[in-house]
Amino acid sequence: MTDTNTPPGSADRLIDIILDEATIGHNSSQVEHERRVAIFDLLEQNMFALENGPTGPYRLRLGIAEKRLIFDVSDENHKPLTAVALSLSSFSRLIKDYFLVCESYFEAIKTAPPARIEAIDMGRRSMHDEGSVLLMERLKGKISTDFPTARRLFTLICALHWKG
Image 1: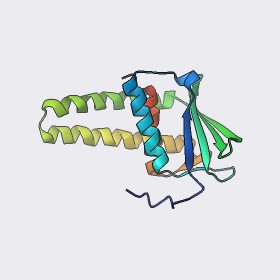
Image 2: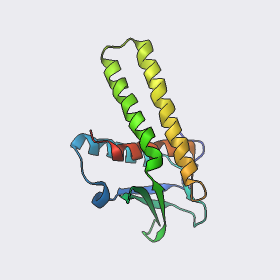
Image 3: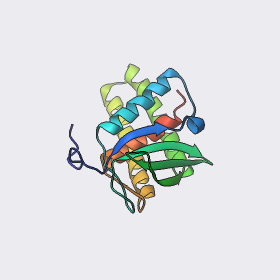
């Protein structure tokens, strides 16, 4: 699927995402796999730009410090450009609820009728959209993304919190 908001070769994109292992740590192989998939999906198609900085492409290092999610952005040559810190507390309820809905979905696909599975999945997607909008709002004035990129970043943020 092509994201029409991101022209091929656009400078305003992420070309690398690194998780700060010192602050995020390691988990089970299943959790690590989910994180790798989230990063792969994000790098495949994204629109990411500093609102008051140079154009990209960018490298992003994600970490956690003092209950804040840190977006440490550098240029393609690893020159530091900016660090943006977002409070995790604004995401915590939503992430917790999202995980509960995901658990319900995975349980439902085992035995529930298709209509029930579809209803739970619609709720899950709605919460994912809500998290994406919240992320875009929290980044406003610092980092610009399109909605598909915000969705992929929210997926990665959830994967960072997933304990398996």
